[in-house]
Length: 616
View 1 (cartoon, helix red, strand yellow):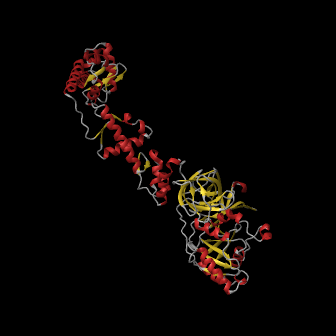
View 2 (cartoon, helix red, strand yellow; view 1 turned 180 degrees about the vertical axis):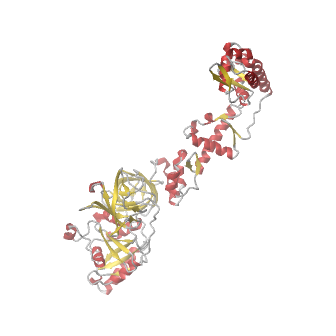
View 3 (cartoon, one colour; view 1 turned 45 degrees about the horizontal axis):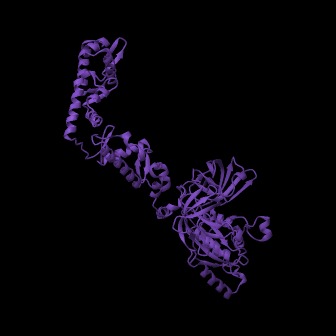
C-alpha cells in the first residue's frame, strides 16, 4: 500500500472501555457526534476521523460501537480495516463483548493489530499486571497473540506516543488494484451544496472522479462528482482507503447502508456456498436453521444447510455449507461474513464465500457438494467449470472468476472443464459405436445423427469443435458430413457383397433413365438393400436424384460428356435438343435437365441453356 492511500485502523472492545476517548486523544476529534451518543456516553453509529503518522502515512480511524445490540454496526466498521486496536479497560479486563468482537475480527480474517489497556491512570502497577495476564489469556490462539500491548490513558496521555509508534509500524496491506471497484456503504448523508454523500472503505479496484457506478443490488446507477480519500479531496478512490463519494442523480434513501457501489456487474445471489466455522463458544446450530448474515455493511436473513454428513453444527466445527438468502447479497469469492442467531442475538460463527454463482444443493448430493467446496477453498477454480457442465462458461466470465485461462479447454468459443470435455468425448464415441453396431454396412454416421439425445443440447459450434478435437487426436475419421471411429472397417458377408454387386448392375443398366427407389425395391426385396444403397452412395458409385431416382456415376459422366460436346458446337441447348441428345422422353428429360442445372453444368437462358461454370 502506498503512502498516499493510507491505513485504516478500527477500534473494538466492550462498551465504556474508552475507544472513543482514545481516538479523541490521538486525533483531537470527538466521534460521539449524535445527541443520543453524547447523552448516553456510548457510540451508536460508526465514527471516522484521520491522523497523520510520523512516517507520512495518513491513518483513518473507524470507531466501532461496543454495545451487544450494535454488533451489526461493529461488523460494518470492521469490514475493510487493515488493523485493529482492541481496547480493554485496565479496571475491568476482558469482558464478554470484548471476546465477541475479537472472535468476529478473527472470522473476518484480520491478521494485524494491538491491544490497548485503556484507563491505565485508574489502576496501580499490580492491577495493571493482572490485567495484562487476563489479556494474554483472552487473546491466546488468536491473531492478537503476541501482538503489542500498550498501557494508555486518554486523561494523562500516558502511552500516547508509544501507541502512535505501534500504529505507524503496522504493515501495509495489499487489497488489490485489479479487481472491480467495490465500496460497501457504511454511511449516507446529505451535505448542503453537494447532495448525497456515501462513505466506506474501498475493498478493491480504483475509481476515477466522473465515473458512472452501479448501486447494488438493483439496476440503479449514479455519477460520481467528487471523491475524498482519508478526509482529503482526491481525483481517484483506491483500494484499502477510507473513501467518500459525492453521488449525482440519486437521493439519500436510494443508497442505504449495505449498498455496494461498483463500476462492474457483480453477482447478487440468493444462495452462496461457503466455508463456515462455528465458534467454540457458540451453542449448537441445527442444519437448516434460520440465521442472520452480516457481510460487509449488509445484513439479511437466510438459512444454513451443511454440505456435509451432519445434522448439527457443533461448537468449534468448520464445514462447507450453503446459505439460502431472503434477499440478494452483492458479493464475490473470498468475501468474509458473520452469522448471528436471529433470536436471541448472538454471534454464531462466520467464514468465507466460495461460490456466489451456485445453484440449489440437494440433500442427497451434499457430501459430493462439500467435496467441491473443499477444492474451491484449496484454490481449485476448475470446480466452477465443472458446475457449468456441458454449457461451459464464457471465457471472459471464466477469467473474471479464476484469473486463469490455461486450465480450461476451449470448444466452440466456450471454456470447459477437462473432465467435462472427456465426458462429452466418451458420449460421442459411445454414440458412434452404437451407430456402427446398429448399421454395420454404413461407412459412418451423419453429424446430425450424432447430435441427438445427450449431445442434442450442445451448441452447434461446440459439437463441431468436439468432433474436430477427436479428429485431431486421430480417434475418429471425418469424411465430409460423415464421421466414423478410426479403425472401423466395413466387412460384408459374401452374400451381401453379391447383393451389392447386383444392385450396382441394376442401377448401371438403367443409365440416364434412372431407377426409382420403388422399382429398385421391387427387384431387390432383401432387408439389407437400404443399407447397401447408403454404402453405394457413400462410395459415389451412384446418386439418388429428385424426379429420377438412382443414377450411376458412369451415367452422370456420360451426360456431362454429351453436354460438353453439344455446347462446343452450339450456342444453346433447347429441350428438344436435350431429348435427342439423351434419347429420353420429355417426362424423363425435364428432371434430368434440372439436375444438370443443379450441378451447374448448364444454366438457363432466354432461348435455352448455356454452359455452366462446372462444365468447363
